[in-house]
Image 1 (cartoon, rainbow, N blue to C red):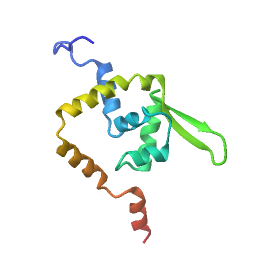
Image 2 (cartoon, rainbow, N blue to C red):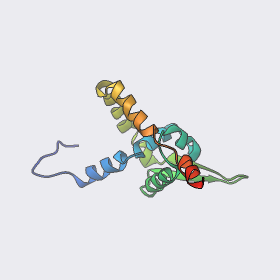
Image 3 (cartoon, rainbow, N blue to C red):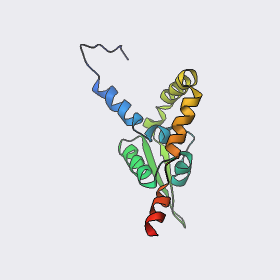
Length: 133
């Protein structure tokens, strides 16, 4: 990738890619899927603060982009798993580079505050339970 020039502006492909993986929750989903096929409930448990509707929406978006594939396994009950496509696996170097950058530059206390802030929200199930009372 050549060095960007202020005269030529921002490359539309770069901007699209950064906004896709940088959209809230997408990076976490893609990172977790690097470990292999994963069920919805495992993704939800691995991402503090995400709601079921948001996880569903993000998985649909990533699937429509061809980065994630949805596999339905017949049986009783039906089992659905999500996995990275070849396009998604190609991001592994990107996530490795982000991880290295974070290890070097991100203050652990700031990271802990950020993670705590996200997970301090009430889960969707708690919101629905309080409305039912």
